[in-house]
Length: 429
Image 1 (cartoon, rainbow, N blue to C red):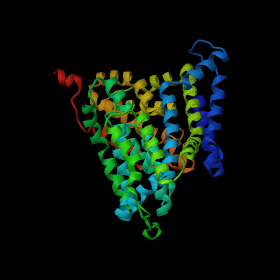
Image 2 (cartoon, rainbow, N blue to C red):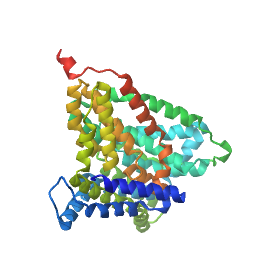
Image 3 (spheres, rainbow, N blue to C red):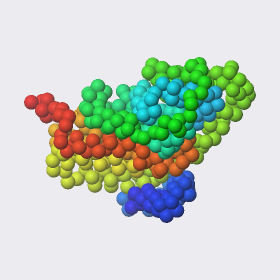
Image 4 (spheres, rainbow, N blue to C red):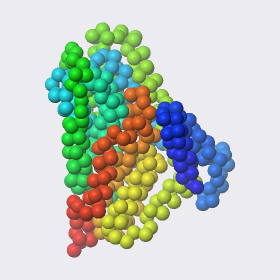
């Protein structure tokens, strides 16, 4: 019963989308609002009885979670970056360079690999989506490629670094809960996702692009690359994503004013217009946080954890249970860091009981939570990409090839037991 609000939301959202043939006909905001309202009137058979007022306070505290407020800030900065980068022609410059230098069949793989490098440098998928979506949209308009496809490419590249970066919050959560270092987890993780990266690059290289539809590359002004160079360089230097994005936005404003793309006063309007496009996503994130808090009170999350943690009889079964646990909690909470923190202690107990290497457990936690986060239509990555591309997030899901392949190879490597790492018991012997 504790998961019923989420189930109702998913059923209504997908039923309306499939029934009308357009998922944009049923706004996500309305779906989340409906599920939140239902949750506030539900009673829990396993928790202390609370009044409606007390539940509203609980809902508001959940929506005010620090990770969610940080997400809201990143949403706003993403919108600002989008507005400024477009207004001062930074996205045009990057796209024109790519079209001028790369052969037609390497434009899409190039976008994916740039996403991988940028997300690994920044350690945040949200910042990567914000930085690359303007370029992806421009590439779609100049090559005739589906905007849903380029959106899926950007999200896939963003989830690469979210999963593997040393400074990613998911990496920190996974390694901390399992008591290992970042390098140990990275070594195990890169083997598991390597094939997914290779296949994605090859598939994108083979994807048919009609060269006649590619618009001729326009003027290239390398000064316009400064915002992108700054966001990469500052992230590599270890600066927080919010600071890196803020400095990049300011640099874009200065260059835009200097080049006459907009006046000093108009630059603030450009930033504001970009931010306005992300307001719905920010409110949805807050509502989701409140909904998750109520579902936790109703016992839904605990039921999910306890149900899947039972009945394991083998190492393969134990690893598959860990993968299923973190995946389902991620879909329920739309936050891969929170899902790892919630499942991590249980996963540690399971891994010790079945002698599973901590590095392998941490990799499974991070891999599956990141993959499903990039495939959940009401999670931040697809919400942001959909808002910028002006398409329903669910239409992007089939094109996030990298995340789909992550799940496939994650399951394969669990079943075959590769790569092999010594568990704690083996080390002790």
